[in-house]
Image 1: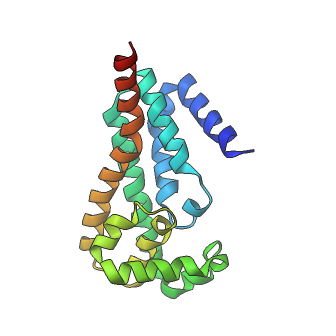
Image 2: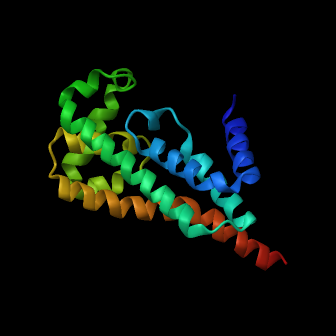
Amino acid sequence: MSLNDIVYWVSDIVRQHEDWAVPIIFLLAFGESLAFLSLLLPATVILLALGALIGESGIAFWPIWAAAAAGAFLGDWLSYWIGYHYQDRVAHMWPLSRNPQLLVRGHAFFERWGVLGIFFGRFFGPLRAVVPLVGGICAMPQTSFQMANLASAMVWAFGILAPGVYGIKWLSQWMG
């Protein structure tokens, strides 16, 4: 099954069952933010496509945004918790055991930027999967982590969905 097939399949489910949009987007954002799963799940592409579908179908934006933000927030929170409780043992867990350079890069990024690294790490592909984990491994204070986590989740959710939602509406008005 190709990435295009997956995007089409998920989009088709949401198109046919709009009531499922909120839980599907929550799960995709959660999976995209969870340390181990995000390395395997092509959720960014799917979420961008769903943003366009939402703009086209007239599904309310704010509940979808809240679902994406909540999923991203909880995914990073769980990643932090795993890092905090398992410390250096996470380097031996699959799939990170096959990609040890990800933890090294995530650690360097976190050491350089600290709490800002938690915020900005969400916006950099593979780092998104490991920066919260590294924050936990380094025992970053939970309050600082969660503030950066919440702010970045809200901005990321808007940034991933709004271009499709509002871009489709703008194009429709401009073309029509």
